[in-house]
Amino acid sequence: MNVRSTIKVGAAIAAVAATATLTPTFASASPSATVASAHASHRAGVAGVQAAKVTKLSAVYQGKVVNQDMVLGPQSSPTTLTQTAPLPAGTYLVTATVAAVISSHDQIVCAAYPGGGNDGVFGTAGNPGTGGIYGTATMTDTVTVTAGQRIPVVCNSFNYGLGTYAGSAVVEAVPVAAVR
Image (cartoon, rainbow, N blue to C red; front, side, top):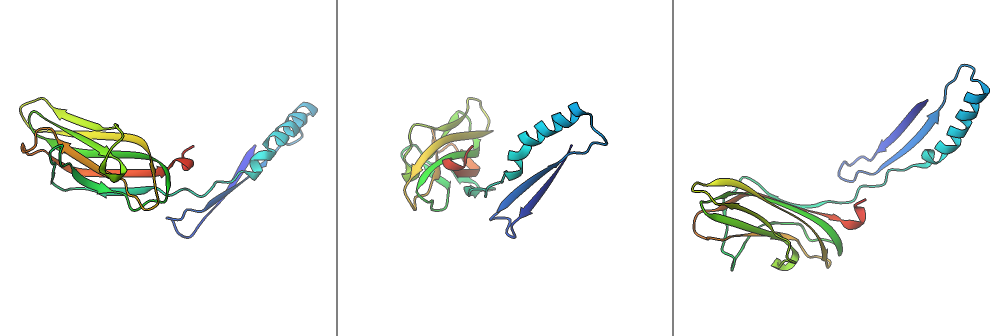
């Protein structure tokens, strides 16, 4: 069996408008009645594949900052590291990652939630040792926003003033309807 796929890709990579057409072909020199019957049965089962389409990819909204030394504030005044662009209204699957240099006996707590608050989902990383270490705080959550809201990533240091800082942060929001 040979399957040929034709994929048409839109001119703009950012738009990624793709369609796929699958055309099954079957080759057999002189099939026996059993093989011919099997091929006919298989063709009937594959008929639905011919109409398969790849749909347009949904947008991923991202905020990103790298190679910075952003000193983290105390819990009473967390530091905003990055944020998405204004979003269309809807529910989003949000992931965020913060890479930090954590001072001795310090801990970072980060959240990604619109309006600067949070819903109780945090990313943390800590350092119980005596020297500075690299740490990564990660978060995954679903967030519902109104049109125009942004999703910021904010972090704080438990023991503010020890020199803990974030070097990079990224937040990505994917419309939940696009997650399959």
